[in-house]
Image (cartoon, rainbow, N blue to C red; front, side, top):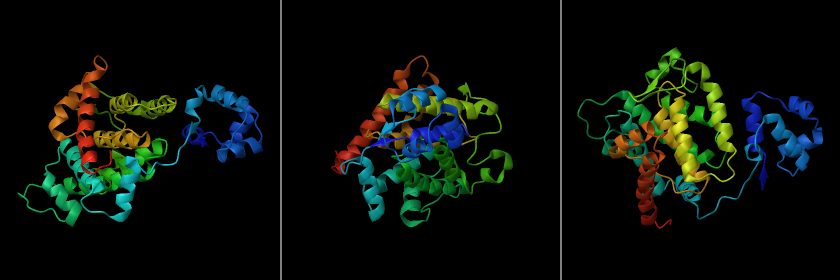
Length: 307
């Protein structure tokens, strides 16, 4: 089925109303209604829209398919709705939250992460746990549920900001007004000691450009998703939490495009960081690190007989 969701996302991001668009390219209310209902319109209308937005057709339209019952997304949603214990959804929640948080400095162990997920208690402690680590672990579980809900939708600024809002809500950072939970950063930041990132005044523009160019791809590949991730991390749009938000988006986009997803494990973090640092001169390093993570997740899929 044809879909114009990309068009309306583009309009929202550029703050262009339906009335303004109609007047700008001279289309009727009936044609606008067809676009809203995802009905076929004349190719002249598509050309006019592309000229107006200075984009390729892939940036404003796509063809949506019913979610395949054999897809990983369908299986994860099914297990989630069943509240199935011990399955792929259960294991993914724990492994993704533990590894992604631990890469960013969380001191919680995988067993403690499992205990929080399964029993809502922290389990055995050594007395050095940080309350923010616990809050962000619970929040990460909620983020994963959210990306499952929106996995088949076009990635947008609203989705990205909402992931950040959920991840950082209730933390010490969220109490700082300047931190801007769920909004783009207000102060300059860096990716560790690796590279400078986009200045706060340019983040909104750079994010819109990134999303525009990404949506122009008619057939998203594994390499496209990795490239999007690098560019997202180079922008580093939020004050903190960019790595975790970025890795959740990669998982979502793999599900949307029927590509086996992956979890970058904490033991591979130095390879992952090197891949980001050297991406412009050697893309293969980050791609291969993610490929190795994908192979590990495929073993989990095989265990549950989903591939």
